[in-house]
Image (cartoon, rainbow, N blue to C red; front, side, top):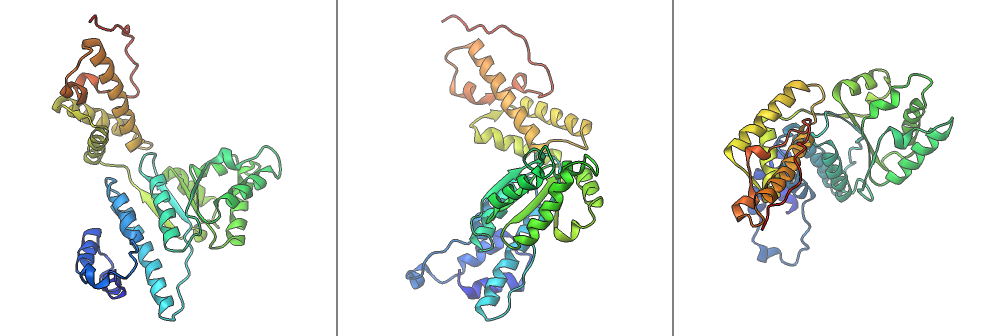
Length: 325
């Protein structure tokens, strides 16, 4: 993409979506007029393709574009001899399990690397067990070592609120204090993302009033709607080269609706869908072997209602008997 096209696409209309950006790319001069120029793939295009494969998350995709736009315009300003705008990119992710927080963190790490913000672009995942030690001073040491491993990349701390659950005398507070110091000592050398359940993370921030100003980007990952969960379920089956019968789809939809209703505060979203699909595939395989040793191609692919698995239901204690040849 030429610099002229970039300027038009990102300064005239900030809310461009990926389809519009692709249209601008297609309007570039013919390839033969610039065949001597090196082809440098747009990191945003690479990233948005990955994110667009995920259902929903429109607010996340919009924020990702805004971050990309900021980094890209900074590069343009530097080339023009202007002072770039320095910003802090530490973040807080609010969301239940299975809403894509880790996937987005990994994609951001790659984007930051390709845009020159981070030197490596790797992702380090951690939780309380990786950070909190067993004696005074041990927690600070473990936290410092983990931050050093994350330098040049992104440190993603899941269930970060667990660091403050033990009260004033708990070693988790030492980890929080160490994070604050390391963020100052290694400014611009890594990005820290704290993630967890919405209500718990809000309480965590409330009892640590100095944290919000250090995490200017706070992003909510909402639960998927029932229609979005069904899209995810169909995508998972198609990816594995399976299909669901109409009655199987209805059963999956019923299971997901009941789970959402029963666990509205801590529903595990795509993670729960994966458990449904993988359990159903196991049931499908067992049914086929009990019925026939030479199933048809359709039999090998089709999940029926009787195969659909509810993760919290007990497994049948049927004897494992193969049919006689």
